Image (cartoon, rainbow, N blue to C red; front, side, top):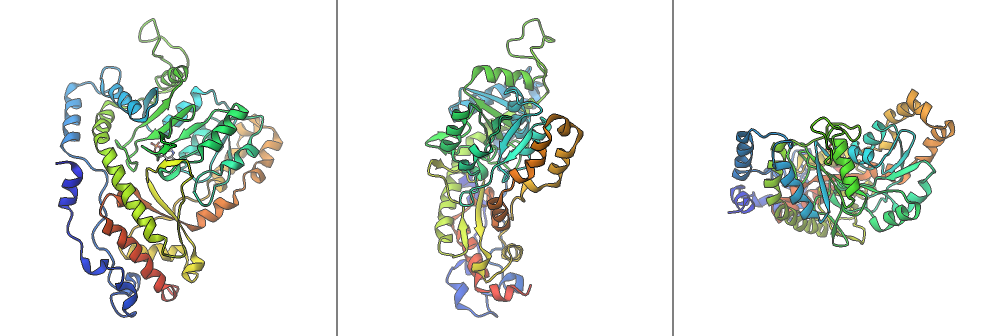
Amino acid sequence: MNSWTRRSFLVKTPTLTMATPALGIALGAGGADKPALLGGPKIRSEQFPSWPVSGELEEQALIETLRSGKWYRGNGEQTRKFEDAYRRLTGARHCLATANGTSALYVSLNALGIEPGDEVIVPPYTFIATINVVLRQHALPVFVDTNINTFQIDANKIEAAISPRTKAIMPVHLGGSACDLDAILSVSRKHGIPVIEDACQAHLAEWRDRKVGTYGKAGCFSFQASKNLNSGEGGAILTDDEELYERCYTFHNNGSGLKATGGNFAYSGTGDNRRMVEMEAALLLQQMTRLEEQSKRRTGNALYLTSLLKEIPGIVPAQMHDGCTRNAYHLYMLRYRRAEFGGLPRATFLKALAAEGIPASRGYSPLNKEPFLKAALESRSYQKLFPEDALKNWHARNECPANNQLCDEAVWFTQNMFLGRKSDMDQIADAMRKIKNHAGELMAV
Ligand SMILES: *Cc1c(COP(=O)(O)O)cnc(C)c1O
């Protein structure tokens, strides 16, 4: 029996009473329709599917690796096997496993020769690691505003952000959907600036029927615990460029390259240690056997939820760019338009949802406005590395009004919530309708 049938079999039968959509409107404020936040019954009392998912496959693989005594890639085979499997899954020519997704980005930047004093174009709507790796390089992150409809970088605004110092464009496939690769690659070609795809949330996602992470010079993935493919920590770089692959390998292995001759202590450059552990690779190889089925289930549920939410004015699910032929749904993202909920603040909406048994997050805050960025720009190293006007103009150059609005409106659901049944989706929509019907009373909370 595969894991999912076994899982669904083990999950408790839901309480059907609260799951009926019609119930919400029919009953008065004192009945079952009363929001849980105001003391009414919850729409949902069971947990959403838990994450991660593992079983005997993982147990056996971990025990075998443990007993082999070969715990690192220097003497084991797991990491190499995983790289080969992930390369074949994505269609990339080369794959290098790394300690984590941050390392994948960091190694790529170093292998591409991004140096102190350079600029890197990034989106403001992403996990902080995308920005941190640029700062660790003592390069200047230049933020390009977000497309409020898709939650992805607004590719049409990238060209205007390019300066003579721009040495890389680092777009993110946020939430597992794809950013506008056609437009991004066209700017990249026109200006000869390499693209590093941050695909850390986008395992199996596709652009025009080809896996994301295979379009840029390098594509970076994360296998951190929350991600759709996970080993607690872990990462990978994809590239079709053999020379770049070798530079990545060398850098991630303390400067000791694949082609090093002269024994263990021969170096072809400087570097760092960003290697994956054999246990992680062993775990990933087993997790990969579940990936496709989990992904299909997420997609089915997410599309169904979108069809339900379309009927609720004020709830606006993130759209996909035309070229996105497969969404990994690492996050299900939507905009909450409070005006259409009688002005009910997003924070109260989220509280009311949580009370109904539907956990949701407000997502990222605007990274371009983080105080630590101002501090970095004022630091001794940045003052030395960049012309005065570049630092002075940075704040005006990096305003992202659409992203500010998005950060005020966004609501997210996590990927594990889409691994269950269709009726789970009905409950999410039911909870939103119930909150909307009682927005006035909830205003007082
Ligand atoms: C998770 C993530 C990273 C970093 O990956 P780690 O494995 O946690 O280091 C980078 N970028 C994005 C967009 C991510 O979601």
